[in-house]
Length: 314
Image 1 (cartoon, helix red, strand yellow):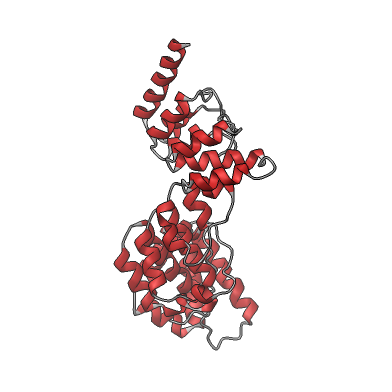
Image 2: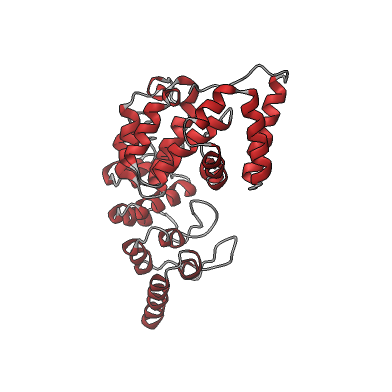
């Protein structure tokens, strides 16, 4: 199936067909199965090749149920499907990453080779970002081994993959990611990689680094368990109580809750982090995040006991 919208011989203009596609997409999004089914039949009536692909593959009922069930699979990913078949295929590829099914991922890309072409470079970037977030290095390697157009784009398109690797403690994926994007030469990235010699040189240069750079460097060092670097940064002005967080103002301790990183939490507690800091949105401490957001009662209890022990020593 080509990577362009399949069009039939009906009288509808291209704009009319685009509107029909949009209506179908929204009907699936809001789980209006009857309306989705009606619109899909109309699209197939206009497009015999679309009908052949669906009827010769999953079948209309399965095709429709899958799009409705997995409508959110393409959220926060660079996917711009031109029609129902493209939306179906892209969702299958993304769900293979989520389900950790490498063989299905590879088969899907090999079968739909247009996803490796120049017109799908943004989608290729999105796949790498999603694989980075979910620590699926084998999927990134498999995609790059298929020689996608992304590898030939100069300069490479913008991506958050490198930032994700540092923010979510996935720096072991950098050898794959740097085949496309270089690691920025700055203090936070040197800290996140645990390169203390470079960090020292950076801070020895003339002029004091911006506080935000210091705090981000501290967060990435702790998240990636480079505690010698974190200590050095604290000695040179990093704020242990910074409200740095990957999404919204909270604290590094809040962030560590979702990484199950007890060593990082202990490091911060031992060095006096304020455990009463509350996040911006919910007004909850890191202990509250552990209990209510991460659903980790053991961690919440551990944090509470750590705070009590520290109070007992003061």
